[in-house]
Image 1: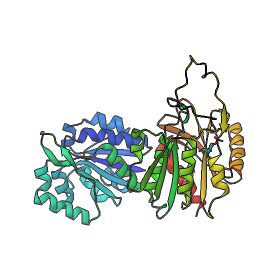
Image 2 (image 1 turned 180 degrees about the vertical axis):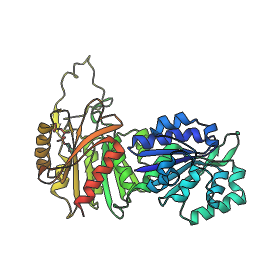
Image 3 (image 1 turned 180 degrees about the horizontal axis):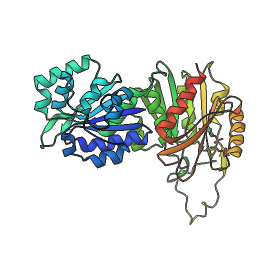
Length: 400
Ligand code: CTP
C-alpha cells in the first residue's frame, strides 16, 4: 500500500522514524512529507534513508510529476505524526502553503493524525474546536496519550507510541472482510514436562500466530488466540479489543482450548508447533544424574489436534494447518506438503521454510499456501504480518 507520513515540527518527530521503519518492514511504500519545521527535529537524510524514497517539503520540487497533488492522489492512507497544534489548525482551515498541505487537500484516502503538544495547547478551545471539526469530517484522531511531556510536566498531549500508530495504520488499511466472523488461532510451541524443571519443547516463538491474530482482528474478526508459551513481548503485537488470549502449556491443554473455541468458530488456524510426542510420565521430583534416571525418556504419541478438528468440524468451517520445512528443494517440499494436507484433511496447508532468515524466532517468514488439489494458492515472503495478510486473503477466498 502507498502510505504518506506527514511529519510536523514537534519533538515527537524522532519517534516517527520508528513508525516509518515499521511500515517499510511490513512491505508498504512510504513517502515522508515533513514540514520545514519538522526538519529542525529530524533531518531530511534520515527520512530519505528510512523511507527509501525522495523527501521534500516544497511544492516546487518534482513539478513535472505534479508532486503537490500526485502523492495525495496515489495514497491509500495519510498519517500525520506528530501533528502539532499549528498543523491541526492549518489542516482544519485547509491551508496549502507546503507539500503536506497540498497533499492533504488532494487526497481521498483515509487521513489520520497523531496530536502531540503540551496539555494546555491540547485543551485550548481553538485546538479542541479544530479537532471536533476534523473528527466530523472523518479524520481519525489517534490519541494523544496521557503521560510525561517534554518539559517534565505530565498530562494528555503525548504522541502515541510508534507501535500503537503502526497498529492503527494497519487497521485503517485493512479490508473488513472478516467482520462478523469468529476465528481461532493457535500460536507458539507446546512444552511437554519431563520433570518440574525440564521439558521437551521447540523453537516456535509465536510471532506468526500473534501476527495472524492481529491481522484477523484488524479485518474485523473476533479472535481467540490460544497461546502456548508465548512471551508477553510477542503477545503485545496481538493486543486488540477483538483478541481474547488463552494461555496454555502442553499439547493436551492446547488441544482442549482449541477444541472448546473451535466449536463456534468459522475458521481455525493451527499455527502452533505442537509436540508430536510427550514423555510417558512427568516426574514430580527433579530427575538427577546421580540416580541415573536421566539417560532415557519414554515417549508416547500426542493426538493430532488439527486432524481431529478437521474430521469433526461443523459445516462450513475452514481449517488451516502449518508445516515447518527445512527441505530446500521446492518440488520435494510441495509434494510432501500435498501429502500432509491430504493426511490432515485440512483446507489449506501453510508451508513455511524454516531456515536462518525465516521461520522460527525470526521477524520474517517465507510461505507457500497449498490448497485444493494440492495447488499453490499463495506464495509470499516478508514480515509475519504481511504473510498473515496473504493467509487471510486465501481463507476469505475459500469461504466466499
Ligand atoms: N499439529 C497438531 N497436533 C499435533 C501435531 C501437529 O494439530 N499433535 C498441527 C500443527 O499445529 C500444525 C501441523 O499440525 O498445524 C503440523 O503438522 P506436523 O505433522 O507436526 O508437521 P511438521 O511439524 O511439519 O512435522 P513432520 O512433517 O515431521 O510430521
